[in-house]
Length: 263
Image 1: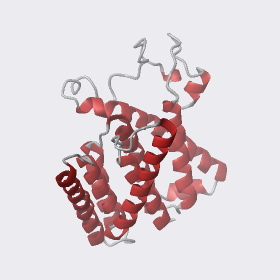
Image 2: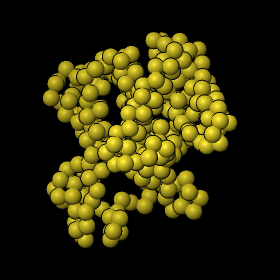
Image 3: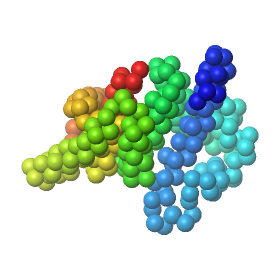
Image 4: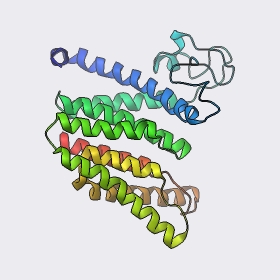
């Protein structure tokens, strides 16, 4: 922590280092977002992990050399195309890297150096991964939600801003609230409105924010979800009963509340 404080006094070095950190973490998050759902499939479990096989072009399958795997810059230098087969590389990869970089810098600008800053980075990075996986697969993996929950409890064990008891109650309440809503909706309509991953994500956010933040979090997430559904209907003609992932709205709401509390 003292080393970080010394580096922070050198403005350009500090912010440049944060930009590089954000890009590297964003590149790793791209790997997690793509590979973790594949790893959960029993057939792929022995063929995929977060390190192997090495990154390769999805079209020609040729492994990428280090110079073609530099976060953001390789995509720009290659003009968004594979060096070998010239097939397009999705804009999504550099976009996630840039979002992660922006979030990393923004948090450092809002939260003073200390445990809350490190915790906010960890929370933000994990929420980015969960958001993208939920958008792609309607899935919030236990491999991420459970570590996020325990990290929230550990943070409040170290940082005394929020009593640990409130964090524990928040985790339990977060799960039970959505569990009750799920079964109430099922009893009335015989349809599923939420997934069990949503319960676990709200439990994790409850561990980070405490039980008193849950009503506000759910209100903001619900309003964002309703607004998105209405916008999708008006712009794309999507039916209102189309199933949308709720995880991204929970994640964004929880992230905003955490920053509001600790800034």
